[in-house]
Image (cartoon, rainbow, N blue to C red; front, side):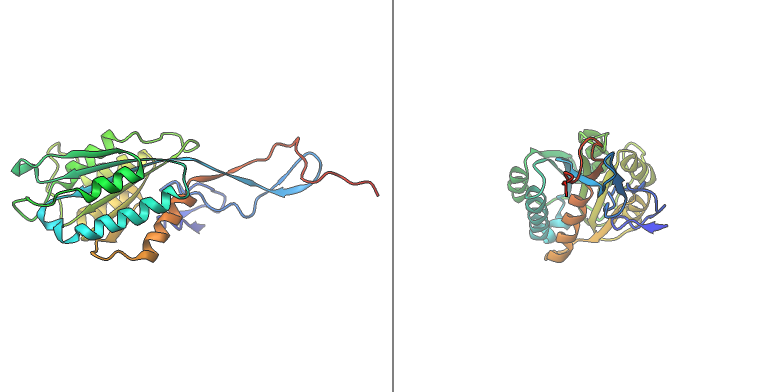
Length: 250
């Protein structure tokens, strides 16, 4: 057995893709024998598409973290955009539905547009401690165009939130939302004040809970960006008709 570095799940030594989060294990062994009799390592093909959903709790309780949310988003999006050619970002913000604060789709576009839109999110409202995070998650799960085929791209969801969540209006549970994310092969990062609801979602989805902060840690962001970009590479068998070395005549 080996441990997935992305979600810490245990997986069989023979597996290349983590069954929990879809992380692609580095293919440093597993040579490929081609028809010429030459042994060469498996080549790696870098996938070029990523769908990144970002959910932001814009209630008053998150206002103290506004600069940290923007800075973490900027660092992460710039890091991913520098490595992945096609990044589609959806940014959604949510307030407290009980106080007439709707769920809004802020961005459906590029990392640059997303950073600009996140800088314009207005924080405030929310009449009590708990918020409608479950409703917001249910909304972005339904709206994002998640890739179904891991050979085409990867799916990532990042939620910035404070406090715990009220029950979803639809009745969907944290366990069910976690399973929906797992079924869609979404890599999940919940940047929040730790609470049982988010911990349940992360456990079921095979995701990660990170502390929300005014000053996000650069090393932590770099680590996340590395895991995301590493997860969108896959081994590609070199065709047997292509020899590694052209034989030379003594």
